[in-house]
Image (cartoon, rainbow, N blue to C red; front, side):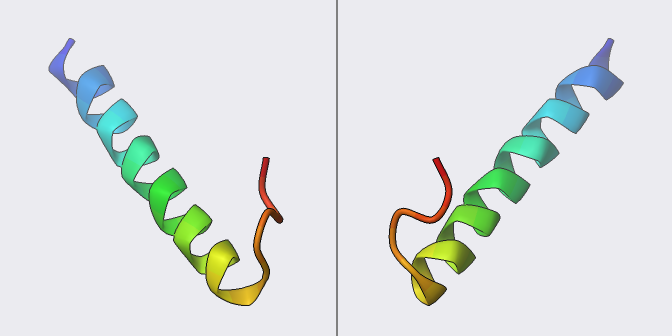
Length: 31
């Protein structure tokens, strides 16, 4: 299903953005 693939891609992008935001505040906050 293409929808599932799109959702996984979005979740991956969101995770990357969350990690970048966490790095800006404090390093090694998310594990």
